[in-house]
Image (cartoon, rainbow, N blue to C red):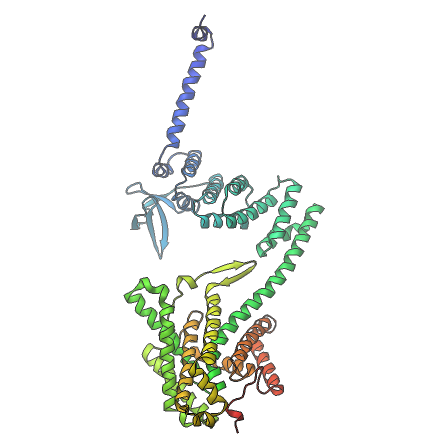
Length: 548
């Protein structure tokens, strides 16, 4: 008897055949269901029981559609509705007293919907668990590394043992080193939170978090120091101690960075004053207003670019810098030729005259631009921050430090390697002899004052990125600028560099202990006492004050 004949003659044949037919039917049905489009699955969410909805959520997760996370998050938050007017599935958001509906699939804005114009798609606790797991799976497997990183960080912040399998699978598939490191931390925290995890595995996870360190790791490890399991408590205590020791070192490094950042700002604000006050011996109380003019030049350049050529916005600071130098430098030459040149040798009268000029400049800016702060934006290359160990470094502060050092080097080259720099130094050391040798001392005075003023304008470009652009901008830095110049040594550029960074770092180490105001007072007292011992500052130079 053939195999087919034996099969059908066996009493079990018809039953087996029926089962085979049913199995094929269900297989084809499952394949057809899995082939359903994302749009069809979302439209099916309102139908059926909670069990049916759970199956649809699983199918949506299987599609991997980019829109799936937004839809599932809206469902989890209770913001996914069905419009009664056209049965469209919409995301509902509040805008004032109105409820605004947006199509969950197409993004079409339906505007405000009437009260009871939609029906909420309901979820229960079991579905919420399924939704969280589905969202975690989708984000962890997203094609976008930033989204995967955000998902890993979220999983670390709120460990969920139900996500452990998804996390482990995502970690095994991960190719980006930064994301993989975040996923390792998330897996470790989730294993610690899972009661079913073996002790040895938990000890490995504790060791990993202790090695990675950070404040967030302490939040996971601190509760474990009181664990009933002696091995876990001991391992957690050792990890916490290690992290705290690391944190102290990184806090020290962070304070040094903050001090260097503040020092770069002080250097920019003071380096122009080092020329006008240190080299020329002029107490220029309008120096802060020259800084302010540089900031307002930046504002005007950005405003023109926004209105006429927005694609050039990332170049706005590079365009503004030379213009700010020219504007502030020209105003500086006008101040020197119109006022200061008549007052050489009379420091008190020079101080009062330049203070009057500062008031005039402030009022002029208030009249033209108004008293309110003006918006100056950060180009994309100066926006954001990055992590260095446990330190956070913002790009705008980093570029200001680079800019300050570049200005310092260029100014040093001008003073040492150019004819105008040579003439400036000659007039500083001996005005009478320089004049006898044919140097036009009046012209040198004007150019020197203009150079110092132009550098103040460059400082305004940089300060516009970290401070409010207002008529009072310069007043915040004038006292600190004088302190830097006096402490470093009047007229010495290296003294200005050393003074700026020394005062900046000292301020940042004192502020946590004494507060910002008292810290500044203590720094001022230290400088006064230091000047009593070294009247010419850190680096003294010969100048007009010691001639003859």
